[in-house]
Length: 114
Image (tube, rainbow, N blue to C red; front, side):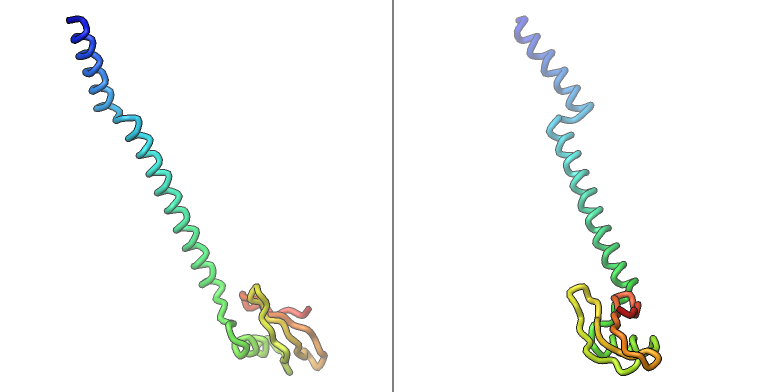
């Protein structure tokens, strides 16, 4: 009789604890899901930030003609030898005020002499 009573009390305590707190497995699963959701949300937010950053920068200098037009609009003439590097920066030769210069055009539209 004592054994039956002890088992009944243990079951009652375990059931109450489960109802009040959920099982450890459930709590751990919920925490893991919440962490995974947060990581996924963060990754999506980071991806959107990168995407929107690229849009804000507005790298419209994908072709040699686009790059040349931007460089000309910056006051350079006789533009030649334009090549795009692996970072998306255009490099070439031009003239500014009649003097030959090496130039670069970055993805933000900045024309610089090198």
